[in-house]
Length: 351
Image 1 (cartoon, rainbow, N blue to C red):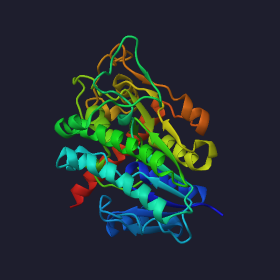
Image 2 (image 1 turned 30 degrees about the vertical axis):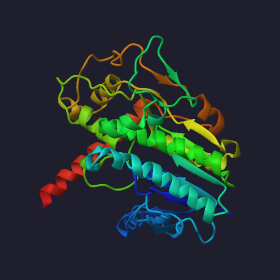
Image 3 (image 1 turned 45 degrees about the vertical axis):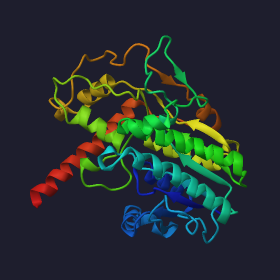
């Protein structure tokens, strides 16, 4: 019998790709979302597989007992995926609003599974390389190579009083730290797998109607490389590594099916990337971007000397992870974004 899975955040960028992987694998999936509207949208986006999907409403993931009912499935759940913790700077009110839901939402879910879902064998938590990388020291001699043994040294004080990017990084760090602390202290019957991706690019699986609704990583790609000018400087972003969302979702599925993945921490990263490479790929393949994409210095490296990288050998060894080329990812996301832009312009013309 195919697994019965509870998935949080199935309406989001990463979560919708995870949902697609689970459905194609044959799972039945209960999606825990904040509103019925979000649940209805999932059902529309996955219309051909609606019979495999059910919806549970969890209005406030930080409320006491938020998930206690949601984790009680019929049939009982085998696996729980936690991807809910959106990354967008557009709608955050304060730094605490970034940090609190990530930590409390994670602990609420783990506690609910421990107390109310004895059938669950594994919880799979999606975090971020923000919990791994020290963003205050991006360049070093020799260049630093990060592994799963590394943790971002950011503090609570920096998170609360720093800029929103520090709050985001701390939210991922502290939520993952608390998750592993919970596992050590509570000794639940299930095991835990954490997956930490860097910048995550790729076409969306869930439907949106405007480039303004892109996830943060894709939105930066759009602003810097698609919606700029030929003479603009090639952008620099402190995240020097990336993964294609489809490869991340494939690793998420393996995190459920590979027994040896239990109680392991994984960085799911393809390789370093360079915005000059991205611009070169776009300008070589899309003539319409000639005046919109920075020219820079084609064929050169825009990353600073000593830029960090990530060792992805563990996720390859344990989960058999495979990664698309940067060119493949950029071409696919470019086709998606340009098509989205065309449809948005057509809609505005009609109305």
